[in-house]
Image (spheres, rainbow, N blue to C red):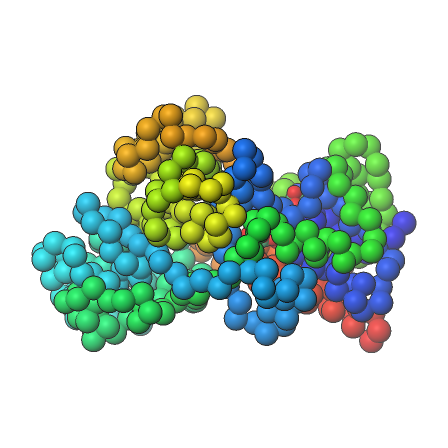
Length: 437
Ligand SMILES: Cc1cc2nc3c(=O)[nH]c(=O)nc-3n(C[C@H](O)[C@H](O)[C@H](O)COP(=O)(O)OP(=O)(O)OC[C@H]3O[C@@H](n4cnc5c(N)ncnc54)[C@H](O)[C@@H]3O)c2cc1C
């Protein structure tokens, strides 16, 4: 028996293990369901192309995270890139963010966006994302971009989604910025708005290259092919699907919270298990193509708000690093979301997406050198009112029993690679410092 068990060797679990060791703690074990580490931050090499589990770009705004990344992989191993992101709507490519780049759209759309901004309702509180968008951006921007895009990426009615996640993800605007961006095409460099205006990306090996380094710094063996089946909270025993059992005093769980709750063996007074179905998230199907053409696109990524396109985003990894594709080739990733849909629906959506991409970018069948489809079962957590009210209590009830559920899906939230690393660090420190008190 180890004193501490970590479930999941995605970024949060790896970070927890790394930081426990940094704090001098070796008495722990880490288990991972899959045969490889990295969770969502993995990379597939196929036919000379490098595909991540959909677009993963590093946004560094925390000094500790920046130091750690550059310690794992020296700065010269990364490209530092200024975003070239676009929106495709009304048959036009406009720069991202939409609200400050209306140039090129039909005059009536620009008028509706500016007028809507001027007349935006002065709401004190907003009940959902739809109201929040009206309050902050007005009816035009909500109608033409924010509402259709967020409906599509969440695959969920945004009137049932709260606004508690918006913080750093939706860049604010001003009237002067809107007017400037409506009357002329703004150069990329003046559009440094939002959390993702700049990013870094590994020159080779895809996003997994720095995660692999993190894995190698961890001394304890990472026990892959161990999928936790039940977690007995009363007797503090985990049973894995391969029949192995492990006792623990403290559990760091980075596996999805809905799965954890569903598979809890609880003390009789506890009622957490029945809450599992209340936690809602969407799934994303990620399709990747290797294309035998050098200049498929000069953009980094493009958002597609309109419902006639099945996918909500396309990206071009060969523009993150020229090692993502062989010489004179390009690579592409696309994503569409779904909630509780049948395999037949997903297959049909994939077929439509691929057909639409080929039409839009004029890609012929003989140009496609390779194709990789990746299913991401837990992708975007849905922030509904139920989650906002009940999640803190659920996490606290678990923590009171020394089960720390953390990370993107452990804490059931919308967060980045940076936050996953910081979450793992925080849970390790909390456990060690609580023990020493
Ligand atoms: C579509 C999409 C795009 C994204 N793009 C970006 C981006 O551009 N930049 C950015 O910073 N972040 C991005 N992120 C977020 C980033 O991927 C996550 O914040 C981070 O990878 C979460 O790490 P984690 O360890 O918390 O979760 P995970 O990576 O999900 O790790 C959990 C681990 O637990 C394992 N596991 C699950 N069940 C069990 C079980 N029963 N037993 C044992 N192990 C189990 C899983 O196999 C997995 O390895 C994106 C996320 C998504 C969904």
